[in-house]
Amino acid sequence: LYPYKPSRIAGMISVIVFAILFLVHIFRLFKTRTWFCIPFIVGAAFEILGYAARTKGHGNPTAMNPFIIQTILILLAPILFAASVYMFLGRIVRNTGQDRLSIVRPTLLTKMFVGGDILCFLIQGVGAGILSKAKEKKDFDLGKAIILGGLVLQLVIFGLFMVVAVVFHVRADRVITKGTSREAFSWRKYLAMLYAVSIIITLRNVMRFAEYVGGEKGYLLQNEWPIYSFDAVPMAVVLVICVAWYVG
Image (cartoon, rainbow, N blue to C red; front, side, top):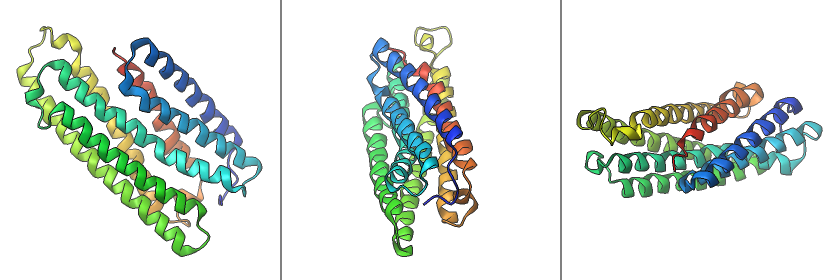
């Protein structure tokens, strides 16, 4: 299953970090009732369970169930984070009172991108399920191809999302005067955070794409450090940044 013995220490540290962030997000959610951030909490739970399963793999690297759990949950968690990112842009647009400046209406924006996100979730979930249970090369190749398709779709959706965000930003910057009541919402600050989070998730997806393109003999799958450096750490950073999104 694993081409190496999973690190217990790295797995435990990841579980602790994501558990702390999970609790912080839970606290912020119920304090502000900012329900669009629920996917952050579900995603953090995925990360906790995923890295807990990797930790269990240290003692028994050939155990199938923990391997399947970590493969699926760690792969899918960022898709849940992306759902809140998409909804947050709609919230920013509405709070500026400048819906007309967005090339996609806020209500349609959320439905369109979250709908695409759900599709990515389902595609990658199916691919990860096939891949984690693959015993023959054809099954491995099928699972890999499905995951790659889901990752490509996610990258395309994120690219379109960034276009919508940037167009709104440019237009709003010309219309909303500094010092007005609309400016008090600090929409520029929240858009900057949205860009940062979007770039981090996109880079993580590019790494994952390269990982599966490289195949089971590729460097990224043959070594453990990339999943922590290019997945666990960036996703923890995303959760840290997004604590500020609970604006009530």
